[in-house]
Image (cartoon, rainbow, N blue to C red; front, side, top):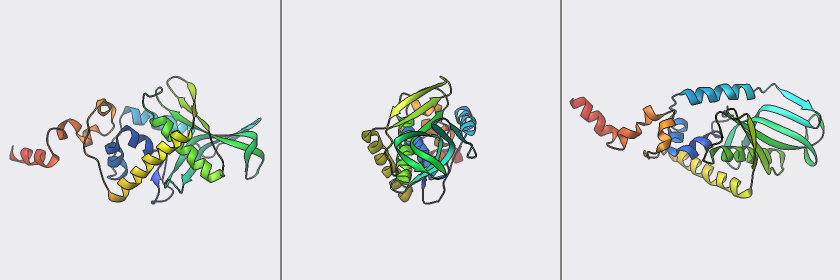
Length: 219
């Protein structure tokens, strides 16, 4: 799970919320509203298995670090990587207290199976940008592990994907700075949203909250 190291940073995990629905992101990250459903509970359980900050495991040419705190000054985001695999490589970076050179590779754990959208890839690319700034290196690949399929999917972290992350995060920072919550825009994604009872998409598409409350008061 992601967390804020400083109140001035936005949560890295919010990129996935914003890509899924900007209004959902604003309700969670600006208005501080949250409602769990089966999906979020399962997701938390899965992340608890991966996010153990006390685990550093070295096997042959690979050092595995779980729950690693990361941040990006340029993007103004912070959070945690589920897993970062540091693989020995002659063009890698040095690690404090560990001999050799290593290439960092982020690995993100997800419940369910691969999604139609790009939210998972964007979150992974954001983690790569953080690691690049922290280790002064270039990261061109990462992995998504899906609990339902029990399979790791390689993701090529291209410059185009990273640029897309930067555009999204810039918009997130603008919304957060101006405390802007987008209006309701209903769609198929509303059915699986953990905030649908708070957002009230079906109600608000017909009438405003003010109109609804005034009507209920008169009833």
